[in-house]
Image: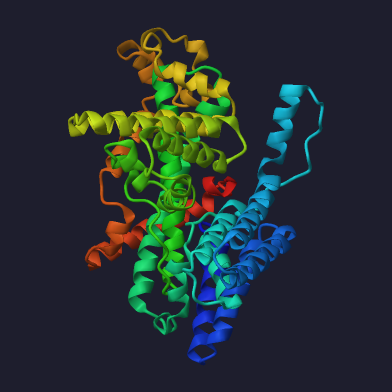
Amino acid sequence: MIFSSWPYIFLFLPIVFFGYFFLNRTRLILLGKVWLVAASLVFYSYWSIKYLPLLLGSICFNFTVGTRLPRFRPGIMRWWILAGSIAANLGLLGYFKYANFFVENVNWVCDAGWGPMPVIIPLGISFFTFTQIAYLVDCYRGKVEEYSFLNYALFVTFFPHLIAGPILHHADMMPQFKSRWTLPIRYRNILLGLIIFSIGLFKKVVIADTFAIWANAGFDVTNRLDFFSAWTTSLSYTFQLYFDFSGYSDMAIGSALLFNIWLPINFNSPYKALDIQDFWRRWHITLSRFLRDYLYFPLGGSRHSTARTLFNIMVTFVLGGLWHGASWMFIIWGVMHGAALVIHRLWGFLRISLPTELSWLITFNFINIGWVFFRAKTLHDAQKVLKGMVDLGSVWSFPLADVPTFKLAWGGTFMDQLLRVLPLGLAVNLISLPLIATGFVILRQKNSTELMLSEQSDAKLAWVLTLFCIALYFAVASKSTVFLYYTF
């Protein structure tokens, strides 16, 4: 089940909510936590119970290592235990996520003729692996003070974050799970949770899934794109990805708030960023924090020479791109962002500032172009979109025979009239272009966190209820089965 499905909204979430607080009210606090862990495992098993033993085995292994790691004196033995346990986690992730990628590239380089391995990526493996690696490093650094298996299992499996994050730090979450303040029902948290959940649901099923129609058609259906179609395709995916993933994060935060748990904010209006560094402070914040704390800093961060710092940035983002999936397209995307951050750092030495509007325009367009590679299945698909984005000649002379049929759903007579007064590319995109404009308007408003924490009023609650009802209608009718980041 997914957050936007009616079984989750009307069955799973209410049952877990009332069961948890009933157990807490009867002072069966330990059973309340057991209930949450069991419910989270059911939530995970709903997709496929086949990989439940893998999740449980990972939890047991990392908890065992984490509890024993601080018992060793600081030194080479302790370091090797940490390195070995991290290698075991990455090895498991690598086998399921990158084995066939390795086989494909060996076949391409050596013509080995190896067949594909029968491997299916377990849902959420990237997220629960990174969460537990962070836990092991915190144990090594002496930042973990309690060793309750039940608390640890709840920390890893808590269903609002289990499948697609946010990536949690042990120190952020365990004080909340241990606090008695979270045990009774908190009506303000319920209200805030329902507000941000409703906003996230609307983002996903109304906005993101609408943009998905245009993005999928441009990337997967059309063989050739004119200027307007290419920009519609790229911008549609740019908006789809943001509203889909931030919508998921909002629903995760809202679901957790019902249980008085505050998950970390994962998005802070990233498309308002004025430079690439600012973007990464706003986009997928918990992943950025993980890459910074557990990869960039251990590599040396910015403590060494400028050349070494720039090298560390590139390595961090190439690996960050590869983390998203076993594809050269993700590596290209990571290289692009690493190079952009390198250029940004070098530009800072010049102490030259650009006008705000120009800074935003450059940053947003770079991000938009980067998402083309992130979305494309092959380099040919990316080239198709990028070529159309710079094909100014197609504004006036794009052949009508090459116009995708899905864009001519208006009817030929009306289209003939439009072609008398408008360029062909603009005429066939007259539906999608206002949609893109609407996306920009929405991005300029307050983000969901700001709306949730702003002053409450009857008008605001009525507005949120309206959003929820509209989103619920779309959710029931939607054919979308997963969030985009479930595949990562």
